[in-house]
Image 1 (cartoon, rainbow, N blue to C red):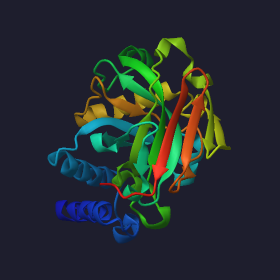
Image 2: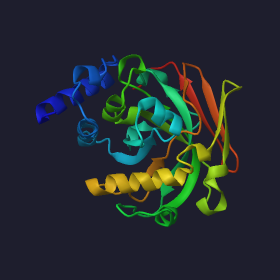
Image 3: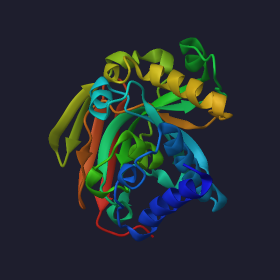
Image 4: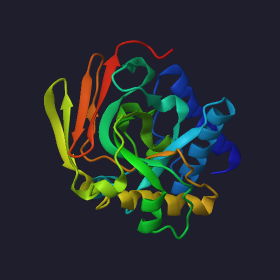
Length: 265
């Protein structure tokens, strides 16, 4: 895709954000689009936000489970950006009207204490860079009609990012084996899904290493204070106005997201 076509695709996604109307799959409109094209579209969208004051505060890793990779026909994860406006306070009503087709996933969020930049990052490097971990709920969303996404669509659409709620209880990464952390996801008081940290590339730490080594050659570093979401421990569940979702993680505590029917300001 040439520069003008990349910008056209980015503008279509930005229009979906602004109007609340999803668009047709990009892979149908641009059937020759590659994964590299998709990341270039994503970068244009994120740059547009940054120029308007909504800066990058972290990253997310998607397609981190073997099941999701098989479903999408890929052999590696993908990544997106987390901006300041995506973060919501725990227990405070989240206006669901600000999303198009929201679903929610439980994740173990890393908060970095030092800079992490690839290539060549090891598990030991990643562990040293983490300040603490907290339970988190990621709101995934799609600007593509009916979630009819290909790998190109989800990458271009910032890895289907929507929002994030962080728990308030920090845990030192050396105090817990993230592979063995079990998770129970409740929606309106009923169990909606269960999972464990080991579902995320064998360990969420592996996702952090992959991310640092993938974005490093692009000139991107993971900075102190950045939040990294490594991937979901369970399937994603749809959410509706009035829903309350709680993820309880063994040894890490819980995190709660509440959704109102209000439009985003």
